[in-house]
Length: 398
Image (cartoon, rainbow, N blue to C red; front, side, top):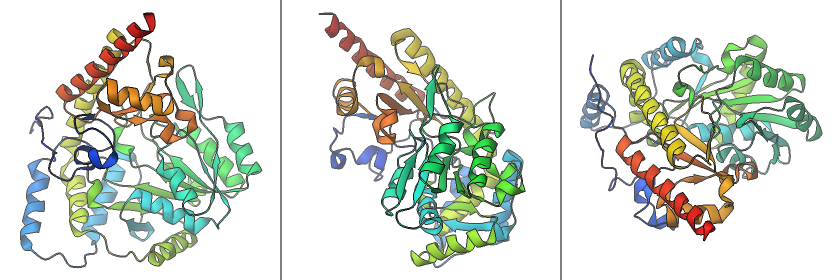
């Protein structure tokens, strides 16, 4: 079996990388270590990149639609890794999951109607609601004993009080790292069914469940749930294909699918990126060993983070992560919130991270660190972080 070297550095500067080349345009120092936006710093293996290069040499990139082999690759992956698959007619393809969320908001709600989120949550959830002139309803997750959970009574009460029509579910949850259990998902979904709420499940992080945990798709919860769901999947996070813009959206209910596709057509979108389609198929057909080894490497990064914080900043609380490669850390003990926390992390620690308040006010005082990078880079970043915290604590003692 081929062994992959995830420690090998990959130079991303000079590639128009959002993560590494856009610090100045986003009003940050170019010297910051970058562990913010959720893409990975690992190159795909030759068994995927070489066929892509051969396709590029063909030199023609006209309108492209996937054939049966594409859908077979997607379904084989879903079946093998997650225990479900879907008829080809249930699929609609979009240039990304966020685009699909926006289409769902437009398809299943009217201006002024409410769509529900659970903050702190991936910030585009709120943006696609508000930017489409819908009302944002929030049933925040509860944070008890260092872990995030659903308050089911408050969840249902929010639906009733705000006449919610659509629920945007983050499964697994970004940024808090929950891999929702079948029981938790079923309770949320049954409440939605009771009140005729359409469920849109963003499952883009589905392949990153950590040891001892499993991803449960809403597709596995039974026909009644399936009939009310839009299931958003993509190889974009799993294989770092975000800029190739390909997502596979599964909509079992014919009427929901018609409404969704009408909005997609109204947006002027039809055929997807040819290279994205090929990359997705190749990754699902040839990338399993690479992914399994990557997940082992990421576990080493999680261990490094846990050990480093325990040794050098035990006052911080690393929220136990069940999925994703994104660490969610409670820094409220520092007494820094909002812009003050951002300024401290950037000016004193020299890091570019994501800050909790961007995921909703319920996240203020937390930070999100992307662990999908080479271990040496992560180690340097953690040293800078905890050195800055030590200096802050020393200054408080003076």
